[in-house]
Image 1 (cartoon, rainbow, N blue to C red):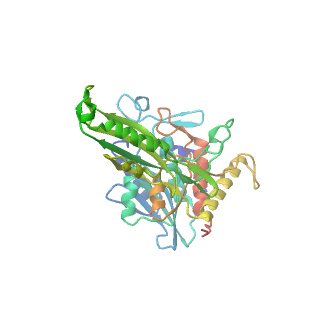
Image 2: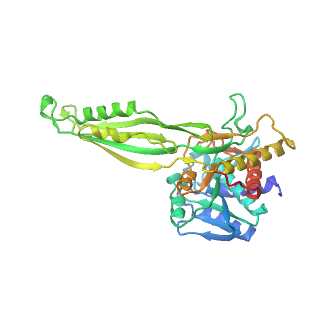
Amino acid sequence: MTDSADELVDLTRRLVSIPSHEDETAAGDAVESWLRSETDAAVDRDPDGNVIARRNPCASTSLALVGHHDVVPPADRQRDDDGAYTIAEREGRLHGRGTADMKGALAACLLAFRDATVPDDRELVFASFVGEEDGGVGARAAIDRGFGPDFAVVAEGSTGYSAAPDQPTHVVTDVAVAHKGRRGSTLVATGESAHASETGSGENAVYRACDAVDIVRDLPAPETAVFDEHLAGSIAVTGIEGGTAMNVIPDRCTVTVDERTVPGERAPLERVETIDGVEWTVDGDLPPMACSRAGFADAVLAAASAAHRADAGVADGSEPGSPDHVVKSHATDAGWLADAGTACVVCGPSEPGEAHTETESVSIDVLRRCRRIYHGIAERDVPDAE
């Protein structure tokens, strides 16, 4: 593998500099153009703007390196006076919107996709989706059109998840075998308005909503285990609104609920509808992810371990700071892919607390490491173990 730090940094800089929080077209153009000029892969730009490239498209199994080229809106400090995205290099890190989430990882995937020697029986796929930050609209559209690799490494953040409290978080790039999903719900309580001086003449919607909140508060949070890694969800009331005036019994009250889901489990929120006048509506449901193939999870971990040993100059064996299987709190496009039948893991350079922040940055050394991991898994045998 040609391991040019400058090539990786330059490509990351190029991608990060392209605004893509409102319109991903230009960023998709750059990804597509690079693939067409740097590889002989079959490149497709679908109607939604997803960029998908394939090597060995007739092979019996398929492995995808998956990312996205949209970002959340930048902070003022992440744009210059003309509104262009800024990117700076300081102390071995690249700073700017999208460096960690996830154009740095996207650059590492592109270079690994180009450089890997692909086994004859494997299709290697590169996919960069639009709309990941908007609920995975690009991934969902691609899946609806038939996108369904056997295996996928989704290059979202997994670096530092197993780090000890006294370690820098970028010491280890772990492999996430599961992540939480998010289900957002609204409870609407209705009643009958009346003058507040005649409480018996109406039905107080706020009281009904409070009864529903009591049910939510007592619900057990969902939890499960994936490859012996414990994953605990949560459920919380995040807002309540009702009433029109101090002297009027309210006839409507709305409650919002945030639930972090885990694979195979949901909190029984339907119980709130046992309260008269309360209706429960699901507003959005980002699926959780659990890797369905232990052999694949182990193969990616082996590739990550090999990359760490290369970083340390160690030929073999286990040394302090080895990567591990972990779980991740945040939903990614891996949830949609896993829901459609793809065996997924998440492995990428972003550390906890970097994505979506005003100070977003990524370690250049970790970007190089992730490039090695993606290159390694693209060439490695993947056991077909359940």
